[in-house]
Amino acid sequence: MTQIPVIDPTVTPAWEALDDRADSFSPDLRSWFDADPNRAASWTRSAADLHVDLSKNLIDQGILKDLLALADQCGVFDLRDRMYSGEHINTTEDRAVLHTALRRPSTDTLIVDGQDAIADVHDVLAKVYDFAERVRSGQWVGITGKPVTTVVNIGIGGSDLGPVMAYEALKPFVAEGLECRFISNIDPTDAGETTKDLDPETTLVIVASKTFTTLETITNAKVVREWFLSALRERGIAQDEATTREAIAKHFVAVSTALDKVAEFGIDPNNAFGFWSWVGGRYSVDSAVGTSLAIAIGPESFAEFLEGFHAMDRHFAEAAPQDNVPLLMGLLNVWYSNFLGADTHAVLPYSQYLHRFPAYLQQLTMESNGKSVRRDGCHTTYDTGEVFWGEPGTNGQHAFYQLIHQGTRLIPADFIAFANPTWPLRDTQAGSDMHELFLSNFFAQTKALAFGKTADEVREEGNPEDLVSARVFTGNRPTTSIMAASLTPKILGELIALYEHITFVEGAIWGLDSFDQWGVELGKVLAKQILPAIEGDGEALAAQDSSTRGLIEFYRTNRH
Ligand code: F6P
Image (cartoon, rainbow, N blue to C red; front, side, top):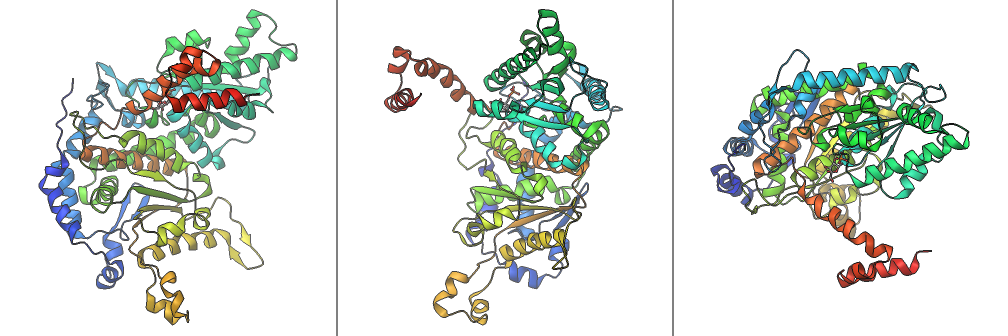
């Protein structure tokens, strides 16, 4: 098994130096900007096509020096290189971690466990692209000869959040006449609402599951198969075994690493797209898990999406530490979490198309770094894994920004915006460009958070003295502004890869295996044990703790 050196970050000289700095730290962004007219320029970086302004963070050159030393002393660069080369850095599962291989050009070679991973990736990609093309062109038809108009992706976690987020983000690139829907929750509402107005003759179902054992996905897939067959049968279609098999073959495909289980489920393995154990679920949107997206936006745009990831991978691998944006953003998160007491991190996209991006990032960051045991089995003595959360601007401004501006907690926030709108709408009466109105909020918020408003400024506005303190904004609330020209498939790939690598950097500093997820197991096992109690097995009910038993009894009494 691969041995990864584990370093307790708290005993490094850099951690001690940062601790000392934090003790006497009194940030003052106003005076820092006044004293250094070049602050914005000297803290702005490019990463592929992203323009990243770090200047409104609570950081100075001394802190940067210590944070970079921390990365070095904790072996971040060594671990990054091991990851890229296919070493088994997911030590608790003894697996390589190679999402970066999913987006490398076909001319590359990378032998992992005796197999050329890049060649395998491009074989599957070619199959996905061919399938996507046939669906898009209408060459792939359903049991009654009709082309597909709706693709239903059934999956959960990484087999859902990435595809749905990217589909929503890239709506303007979706072929006309095609729609994707997503079923993830085992709450029957999800399958019920999603299928209720669907035409089975024009529906293609993609069952996406890395393991093909996930209860939610397999249950939803069975339920949807039943809906599909009974809807066809009501129309006099698929009445015998042969046509039933043909209908399933034409309307159900799968994405999985477990092709044997796909066959057991009844999906023709010829209609299955594989991937590999070295792709973590939350790192899989750019594998065959993105098949629904590839159909929706087409192979050309999907290839651009992959190019975006690859451009960011190269930046992370090649940019000098002081210019390396994922490294710097990951280190800033460590600074805020471990030295300045931040518990959460907001991600605030000023793009309605990115409305599922924070939810996607929650799995990426929190399933990766929500851990309190290091690779060496020791408990961490420091905090890990901030709570990531967010909503698109400007909606959040009228909901939770109050707390970010004037609350007692430090909440570092990433603001994301694009120079060009997809919808060039105008308020003709006011003569204003809507996108400019929108972006004025993006610029205003980070300014207000950084520089605030002093008591004297509040007084100068003529406010009565007893209201002054309530109207003061302390400022010094850190933000990173990320901008790009437009939200394209390539830019989306860059953004996703940026956060993948930020997550990697934090996990590497904290000594975690960011690629396993043992914390989700216990609940799954208990749910299986509890089901008989819900169904009426007295012995199973008696075996529960008093709280769980009481809740089940309430359920059984009130279920009609
Ligand atoms: O239970 C957590 C998890 O394993 C995630 O890591 C994963 O993305 C999700 O479940 C779905 O898993 P699968 O793709 O195997 O169905």
